[in-house]
Length: 440
Image (tube, rainbow, N blue to C red):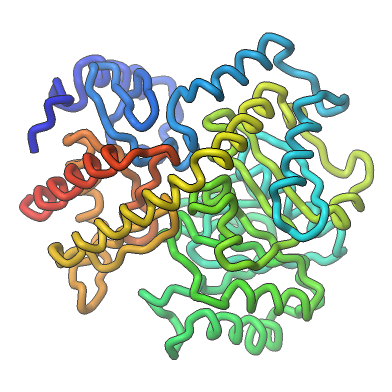
């Protein structure tokens, strides 16, 4: 399609030059999809260094929750930076305490919570795992196939969305057993209720044959699986998992790094199911782009940590805390309703596209965390990763930034303040890009 906002053949000369400079000095390990070189952004729109405009439906992997350059977030950052940039977590400051107090107000655990602060999602997962071992005295964990929890050696032992993430790094942390994440579109067990089948497998196969339940410290799960394909758990599955954990004295950890802070149209994804974890991890969209992660746990567990049991030099950075406080206020006050409303509209429009494109196997998600699974055959549900790659490339050249996940799923995760007009523009580009990719 012709997009008047794309002025140069992509990548343009400035972008190509910077990519060439990067090649000599930056690690090649980053999983880059296509040659976008950002100059600046405003809201849902971003521009590359050659002046080309794009609609951003990737949001820095669901990080830019309030949009690019949100003025209220920028004001909070500026005010905090003018006071001081850093004081280590050996000491106290107002921003850190206020953020933890705000978490205690908004996290619906039904009891008081305490927070540990760090810089990223993988660090928050590491903290949650250490806490679970510390308070239970148990060595083992259960994780789910398709999950993504980070790339440091502890969290990497739980990550299983792509084999390339584990390749070359074995052995990781011992004691982690993976089970299937229930996926009705691609079922691994017999029967209609994949959630019940997974629970039965854990209880009646795993615990009886291989993993003693009394040795399991925690079960770690994404309440809406991200990298694995934007999978929504079947009704009742998370509640069944909560009951299983309660029966065996196992802690339940929800990884809300990608799904939290309004992404699904609720402040936290677990609220859709009404199931409360013992521990939750947060990062990504928590501070609109500044690096922060949090472990949020029921106070009765976290207060058991002894002085020095866990720490972090940059945790609770004042500027990041100020950005998180502003982000939470903006999302809670303005963007939660928009995320739910625009997400419902976007899913409806995508399901209309499903009726016209045989290559769309399923549309799923909640709020503005939406997956479009592409297939070679709708009847056989054959994955189509090459088609996904072509669609991503065509969408980029037509002015839309997207990412993929799962075996062959496009993921749509625009900023939570996305307007109906931007949704319609993005859908027009996506439809044209699908047609072009199919014709290629």
